[in-house]
Amino acid sequence: MLKDNFLIEIKLLLRGKWILVLCASLIAILSFATFNGTKNVSKRQLDIEKVQIDQSQKDSLMLATLSKIERGEKVDLPSWRLPSEPMTIGDRHPRLAVMNPGNLSFIATGQSDMYTHFKSPSVYGNNFALDYAEMVNPVQLLFGNFDLSFVIIYILPLLIIAFSYNLVSKEKELGTLRLISAQPISVLNWLLQKAAIRYVIFTGICLLILLSVLAVFATDAFGEPLDLLGVLLAVAAYNLFWFVLAVVVSVKINDSSKNALTLIGLWLLLVLVLPATINQVGNSLYPVPSRLKMINEIRLIKRENEENQNKIMSEYLRAHPELAAAEEGQNFGFWQNYFASEKAMQDKIAPLIQEYELQLQKQQDLIGLFKFLSPAIVMQQSLNTISGTSEKHYNDFKKQVSEFSDTWRDYFVPMLFNQEKFKSENFAELPQFKYQNRIESDLLSNILILVSVSLLVYLIFMQPFAKIRSDNRLLVE
Image (cartoon, rainbow, N blue to C red; front, side, top):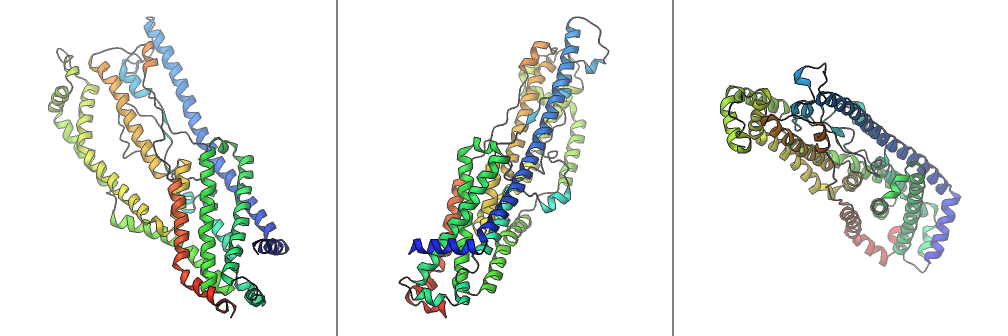
């Protein structure tokens, strides 16, 4: 019977031009989304390459000037800009901290249109808690980006609704459902077979076209076969949820127009309303402290530090005895006082920054707690994580940059207090930043969540299904 149902469904879909329309639609939107995503990644990579070339040129000029100084030649630069001074290198020639895109970054824009992908932490004025975002187009932020994640999360469910809203009602309206009920198969089994066949056809076509589009526009995606396989499985699990929802609505309502309206309403609720509501609840329950207030408090701390400069320097040298040996006969200048004040200021503002980050983390935890209510949230988090563009990735990048900033300063502080000069051979010893993706993928667990939610929705409505098993007239009449 399953074979006969499969052949009948294929004939019906071909006769109604459904497969042709579906293929044409998927090819168009998936191609454009992939092309648009790869274009955004290419722009991101191009921006990174530009700053890397600029840094290389500055380093070449700096090394040439440093060589002249070491040979005793005259250099037309003020003393405070000579590359032989450690603070000149530390402040004017910082190393780039770059977050390069991954092979699958084109799938989801995520937070990549809000945060920068490179920083140049120097020895002066690095407060990454306050200076991390870059200006972006507010219109683009409002409407988002047309990438693969947008197509998968928002458009595929609409195609599934159009593909499955009248699974039973059409047969009932055409008068053929009575003939089906007379066959040696329950209406429930026939419905499940029909839905399963359409699910396999829809998902198979979708994944096949997606792989073909990737082979044309994003060949780098095949460099991560396991991650790509995970994306395909996530798409299949997401499609499964919407087909299960269509089956449930078909059983409960069994009227084509009402089925379509109900499914569209559920799409609005699960994809748009619930995520926005959860986000708004998070902002209300865990409001982020005012950035303006934080900046004002930091300014007050700086002013207080300036008034107690001598005391701060003494405490700094007491905490760093390796630098105290250079204290005798030395008049501390701007940089020595700055590092002492900066360390004191970091200790004082740490609770402020921690409170700010804690509230953000609570908001993210709330979304993670209620993501079971909306498969769209689960899918969005999965695609953002696999693309390396999630909030967690950028927070970790910020943390790594902050850690590298401390390493960069620690390299120059001993040279400053010991009055050492920077030499050409020191250039190769400079600390270098290397971004490491320390965020574990939750794709597998999210796939299991999608499948579990689909099964749960099915089981909740098993009671009407059980009635259908015993009395086919519930759907026929």
